[in-house]
Length: 237
Image 1: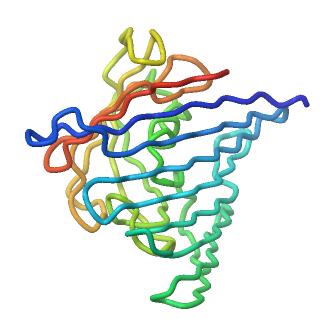
Image 2: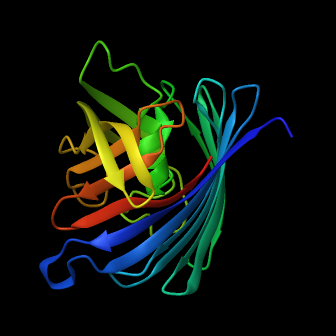
Image 3: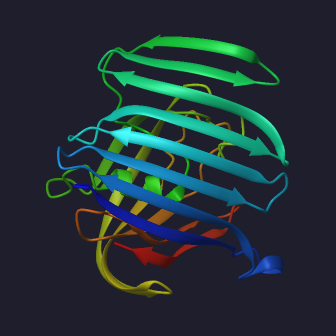
């Protein structure tokens, strides 16, 4: 096979005083990088805390310019089927076919006044990887207009296309050691501008990504009230 595969696992832990350092979830990811420049991400995410639990499966593809092509999201919340959705992206249109016990079958065709900057799929590896698709040499802060399968901070609602606005700033390079090894990284921070469109305001969210074309999450953390921490614990390239 001509494609290149990258697999890894991210451990979720809590930074809440009463649960400090306790495991609260896990994320396994697999990137397939094709010779034509297109990339597919497969991510399996388990959030154990806080209740209800969330189990998410995502298959997401982008083209050679890192523009979203299509995505499938399936959710189980509280160990019960929550919904399944398929998304397709064009320059002027976002389409979604979704099903859930609460909504039944839903079809969306949402015209775009301008192309979206990206699709936020909710796996943390994708949150980090997304930022590498932009040039940060001329600016240290950017505003992004993004589509999401859920505006909930944990993505724990039936998949439907929604739109949010989020800022990100580039904080420089650092060498970081985690369970999976030592990496030269670029550090970024996501910031809610106050009118993001999430169901609640998103706390500040920092991520460190490998300073290479793979742009893999090495570590990350979300401020209060979420107080979560992410660490790359396994990697195979």
